[in-house]
Image: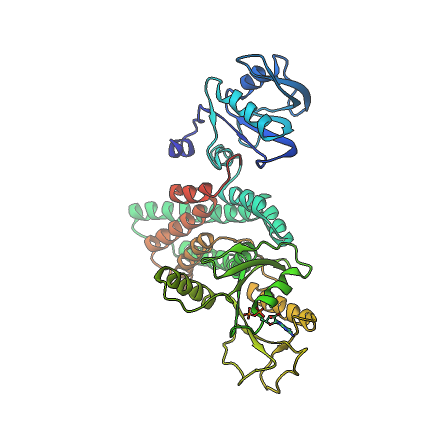
Length: 448
Ligand code: GDP
């Protein structure tokens, strides 16, 4: 059903509705309706006189079955195709209580031809109706999920179509080139030879496109880091002050602090915002040896997660520093409790702090931000934010590299052009993307 809606021009006949605002108490809540019966639904609840398109009108909403007044609020109509989904859409702005919203949803559910929307269905319809491509649909989800300013800015650029336009232009050039090569091949089949000039031109174009794509790829790590964030494992012997350090870092002017349970109850994850990059601190303080097999498995996984973190904060105690710790390049050594003892005279670089007094924490944060920025890269265009987007573009680049390197056989050149165009099309959703679509839209909340 979905597949058909995507491939064919036919719109889904069903009309769907869902709350667009989060559940709970709020001043205002919004219910959205999309589909061919959306305006009928508006009439059923608000009476026959509909407001003009895109004008908010105050209305009394009634239960169509009983006539009971449910709420008074604003009614807005967005006729298709100039709506979010491309279909006729209605917004009901009601008082934001859960009972009010439930009553309105119940009333809508009782109307013929209406059903609750599935997660991401509004955006999926927008995609199916050509209102946005896959990159822009992902950006909508990113915008909803954005917790840092850098994420918001990036998602907004993507939603505005910056990446989509570049990809569409590249795909267009690839398909044009492919059409030329194929035409020449047909011609050659009749005439017996292919003009040399054409393949040489294809090689030149392929090299130029490859360079453009490589520039975008160079920033993909940065885009992924901005969206997904970095993990920092806080490690060290018991009682050196790991938890104290995490608490200190989490409390210092950070935008988000959400202590959430980790993979086991013994690892605490704390999210902080480090210069716009979302960072998850993994506090391994609770990790301990255990006989319980279930707990041991949890501890093993937690260790693994810490071991694969992007950065490590190795904490040592100034009162008992021992020999300089053996760490790799991703570690920052932190000597804590310098209020009790002077830091050791090590040659290796470390940051001296005191979680008790707060001394040195500025320097540590600066060092962390520097490392995070280093991992995120800088300067490059960070427009690719998903691993599958990067992989697809890498595929295209490889195909173009083959052409640029030794593309002399026009049949092989055509095949590689086709491969490259298909890879780019997978990112925007222009070609065989059913499996990608399932993954993308499954992540959406209901009402988007
Ligand atoms: P963890 O086991 O590594 O997580 O260590 P904790 O954060 O639980 O700290 C162990 C003990 O050291 C606690 O009693 C803390 O109050 C104390 N502590 C942590 N940091 C400092 C510090 O900088 N100075 C002093 N004097 N005590 C500290």
